[in-house]
Amino acid sequence: MNEKNIDILAIDDDKVVQKVIIKSLQSSALSVRVASDGDAGIDEATRQVPDIILLDVEMPGISGYEVCDRLRNIEATKEVPIVFLSSHSSLRERMQGYEAGADDYLVKPFEKENLLARVNVLVKYHNERIELREQYALAHQSAMTAMTGSSELGLAIRFLEKSLSYQSINDLAQGLFESTDQFFIDCCLMINDNGNILWYSSESTAISPLEKELIEMCDKDARFLDFGTRTIVNYPRASLLVKNMPLDDMDRYGRTKDLLPILLSAVNSKINTLGTQEALTQQSSNLLESVKLIRSSLFNLGTGLVKNRRDSIVILNKLVQDLNYDFLRMGLEEDQEAYLLNRIDTAIEAAMVEMDSGAETRCALTTVLANLNSVITTQEELFDAFTASLAAEAAEQSGDLDDSVELF
Image (cartoon, rainbow, N blue to C red):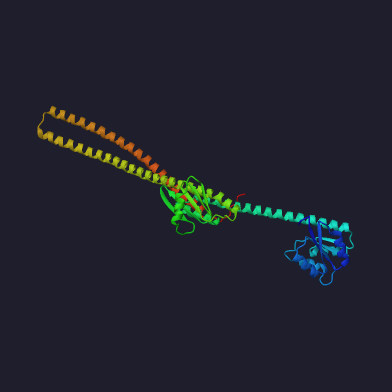
């Protein structure tokens, strides 16, 4: 309401009252219009909505209460302050006026100063109500914006949580698109997997050659590249082309542009993690196979040593038997035979000593094998535990992205 030009509509069938109202209120700051019955007053109020309505209770045709009720059900006039004018001053009449929707109640006859004071109070009241309504609307809009921003931030945080459980780049790309779908944006994604360029689209359609060229040729050192409703977001291992940025809603545009780096940073980090995870897994598998091969070789070596010792003993025993037989046939002198037997015994004892040291070697190898078995068992347990933890994490994070996320 403009305080410097307040439009007042007086609806009253009494010509004298009309003149009193005009004389009391007409000024440079106030303008007064009159209507002589309820129907004419409603028509005048809807033709040009006044700032204040002075409404007589008792009129021919429809009463002031009915006029007030009808005005309150018309969109254009439902907020206009209404003052009932009545010759009745009882509580019952005042309650009836309030129930009909009036803002004030003035008893006839009234003094000029009293009427003017009531109008000024209503002007102030109406202005305050408009100001409060505007403040409420602004606060409501701010609250809704904050809630929307919190919800969108919750979606980003949810993606960060789920990204930890993705086991492949394909799963990672689909998880990203589940988030961008919640932001109502269409995207193309390029991922550099150690020199292998992978392409993904949120719309499950082919990516045009021009879209690929735009992503490939843009300056990768620039985090953002904006052109029209398109925005490219760059990270070392991933680039995202958004094809429908909300330029018609700058608040939403700003929030979206703030959240995109969070999402793509998580994608970039997960790509590096997946590469490291794959390398570690492959290294663990290779190490396990190598240790098993070493264990098998050492076992075969120890078994061969035992077999060789047994074979050597058999050969030496047969040699002694053959020599004894040969000595009998040779007809050697007793001292010659004793000399040769002594030499043979000395050689056999030396050979047995060497074979005993082979047993020590086997014992050492047995200890090494036991340690290798322990290492293999531990490595297998760690590998199984790692695989199980990844599976459990994937299962835990398998919920939809629209699960409720409480930030506070």
